[in-house]
Image (cartoon, rainbow, N blue to C red; front, side, top):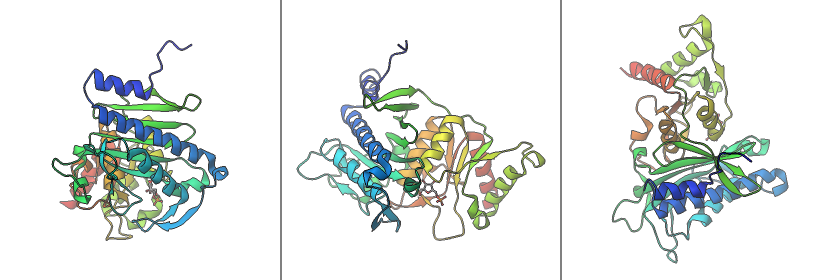
Length: 339
Ligand code: P6P
C-alpha cells in the first residue's frame, strides 16, 4: 500500500475551496462536471473502431473543417454535462458558430466556458493521442444573455484552464491560477487521481515542435530561428536539437509540460489572410495560461498571448509556447525583424 495518500480531483477541489478559498462552489462544480465529461469522452475515444464513432460526421464546423463523429459527440457530451448545473451563463465551442445559451429551464451562473471538445481529431482514425481543451471566464457583470461579446476577454481574465489528453493514459491538467496540477484517470475506480503538483517547465530545452512542411511559407525571423536549431553544434547555438511534431496540440503541449520544449505554430504566408492556424479563445489562451503557470512563456511572436484582446470568438493567432528562454529568443527575433 503506497504511503502517500491518493488525492482525488474531488478532494483537491474541496480543499482548494475550503482551505485557500481560491474557488467557490460553482467553479468547483464546473471543474468536476468538465472532468466527468472528459471521462465519457475518454471512454468513447478508447473504444476506437469498436465504438462506431470513427470517421467523418459528414458536416463542417465554423472553421470550414470536416467534423469527425467524435468531434460532434464530444461537443454534445460537454454541452449536456454543463447545461443543468447553474454554474454557467453560457458556453462556446470550436464546433459551434455562436455561443450556446443555457436553456431557460435551468438557472444561470457567473461563469463562461469555452472549449475545443476534441483537439487533434484528424489523428483519431490513426490512433494518435487527442484531447479536450477548456478555458473558464467570468460573465461580465450585468450581462443576462451573454453573446459573443461577453466572451471577448483577454486570456489574463481566465479563472481556470485545463486540458485532458487521451493517450496511453488519460491525464487531466488543471490550473486555477496558482500552479499546474495533473490528475491521472484511474479507470477501475473512475476517478482522476492527483499525480503531479505544481508542475514546472524547464527554462531551457533542446526539443522543438513545428510542422516543417510549411518552412517555405515562413517569415524571415521564423526561418532564422529554425535554421539555427537545425545547424546544431555547427551553428550559432553550439548544440544539437531534436524535433517532435504530433499534430495534436494537446499531445505536444503535454510533452513540453512533462519534459520541456518549444511548440510553434507561426503565421505563415500560405494564407496571408490567416494570422495563424490555432484559435485564441480555446487553444492558445488556455494553453498559454497553463504554460505560464508552469514557469514557461507563451507569445504570438510579438506579444504575450494572454494580453491579446480578442475581436472574434474563433479568431486565430500565431503560437510560440514552452521553455521560457527559447520562447523569449524566438520572440526577440520577431520583434527585431519588426523593427
Ligand atoms: P498541422 C489539430 O488540427 C490542430 O488544431 C492542433 O491540435 C495541431 O497542433 C495543429 O492543428 C496541427 O496542424 O498543420 O500540422 O496539421
